[in-house]
Length: 196
Image 1: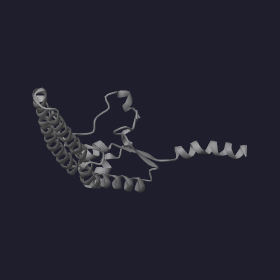
Image 2: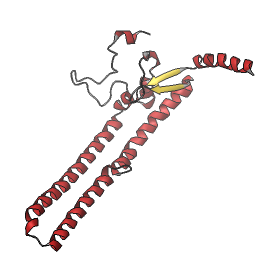
Image 3: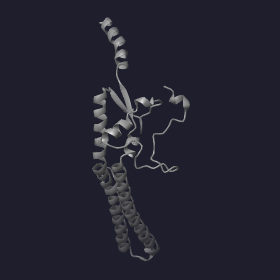
Image 4: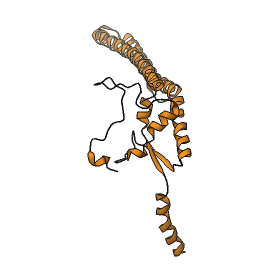
């Protein structure tokens, strides 16, 4: 039994090194897809409109509350309770609307899924096709929460994904602020990190 375990323990690292790996930068890929930028712009406008609506409701509640505080000492107890109940109801209504728009599973999440999921699915399917065609064991995403300290540029297949989706790499919706040129992949500023 010990021999089998030792044999497997020695072969396992060799099997790992025999695998092919690649990485992509999904932020870079998505920034080069015009549909994604348009969808994000739509979401931003929608969120801004809803936020403005909510701010108006909360300002109205604040105004009503200040008016109530000024008049409270003149009102009989039954009218005080009635006004307080009205204020609580308006505040509760505004919070419910806020949750409806921005809460988990709210309207913004639903709209994001409606607009973004088809684009993200196309990207994922392209990555999967590349992985199958090039026999990659797995492809890592170097954007977002994944932490990769070094990635040799020859293993980054982000441009290949964009090409497979029919988009020209580096011609995305994001413009370089200085030159007015399309954004290109960022160079690593540390020269030690660029060495293969």
